[in-house]
Length: 376
Image (spheres, rainbow, N blue to C red):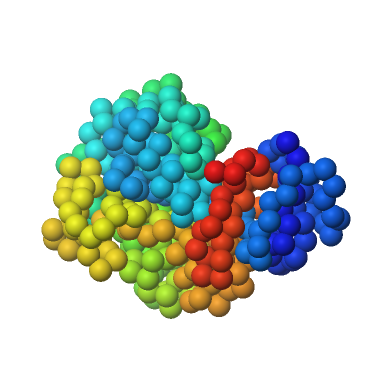
């Protein structure tokens, strides 16, 4: 089926143009001033036409969590994410008993291609290989050492589903696991870690290429001990995840991270939990009650427990608070995460890429979505 998007402000990687976008089946085939002939017309009505957002770190949304191992829960997350402009995501697990993680991984393997909203590429394992000193909202009683044997105990035959894993690199055996994963299409990210700068650097040299919700749950940058934050900042091979909800990280600190990493190595994430998209109240993260009020989600002890952020709001914050152009802000949630995962067919409006496209207004309110050329 041939389609053509007209009357839109097209957000390309380096500029915003007023051209027509031609789609044949699931791919973008032309971006030009040519007028459509036999194509079905999609009138953007002056809206921005953007690549769909990609969320590589999201636990849940709409009352469902990745750790609830059913198709219905995955599908709820998928459809709720799509409403925020996310067309591709990595449902993210958390530190829980090995049997629970096993069930979550198997559920994603069985059902990822059946969801009806945002596409699921695979999963992000956040835990259980963490340092108790930086546990955040992760239950320390379920944390175990990052051996290859422990990893395979819950991944089993589903290695192809594991697209990202967060670990504390200072733990015994972590470098062996990073080395094991290096050629397995799995991004290793440093998170919930008490590592020194030197320990983080060893992990990066071994193949780690990401920092998990940078600044949060890791050793900070100080002038005598640069910490994990310092290692993430100065290594050009490392992408930095960032929760840009205005709560997890001060906007000035976010701007400093942007200056250090550059516009191509910063990735917006939501780290959203089941409460995202729902009213204030009491929800769950794993087995722990989470209290949502005034835009933040916290445990009973006051610790932040993920977020209730929407990706379109994070992109809007990047545009308004980080001194970026709109297309640069969009890249942080589309092109950059795609590149971090080695996915060259998504993340950009460009000839030859999949037609994963969203339409939004001046305030980045999502008006319409398209996945692989199909309006959703």
